[in-house]
Length: 226
Image (cartoon, rainbow, N blue to C red; front, side, top):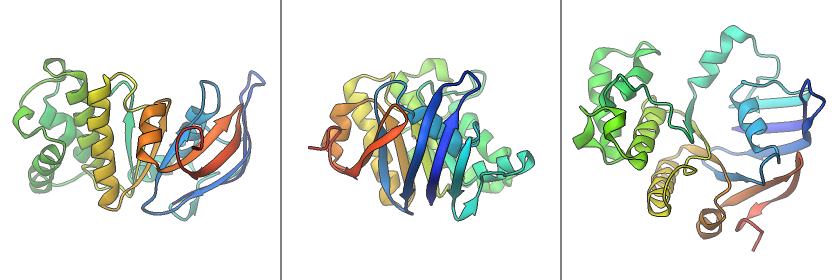
């Protein structure tokens, strides 16, 4: 599903963010990317999303070499992905329903399909009764649930979450991780970049740990390998 082959990334400032990174995430896996700030987590996420290009190496997404993908093809690649960020990135002037429906409208889904799919996704994240509300009327946890519904509404094969619990209190963070786990159990590949040691320890999933752009551990277990 996602493969990095000898990937390096050096920014124009001369900073080497990623050095000779190799890993493969298979279909249906749940994987954490962990490490301190500056370890390279965000750079890897940005390269998966084609927001950044590798300096060297190859990146394979869903069986296709995306290393030299034409810019015009990037939106089509992203259609196979659901994306969730720490800051939610909801449209403030649209209701919960329309925030989720917007993701379907930009891929030209039919009105009938939207009317069927959006309520189903809102139900999945526990927001059926919030459909007519606006983002500023919701708690942080509810806003992140809307972001999750929007990320999965087009049935992506993979879900990429960059610090999805970073702005949430511990109980709400666990609710969001529970939803991500449920989404994974339905067959979606899930990759979560996080600093949340307690979550990583308790969930006991595959952990790719980075330090100064290098992978120092790749195995199932807790944040520190215990």
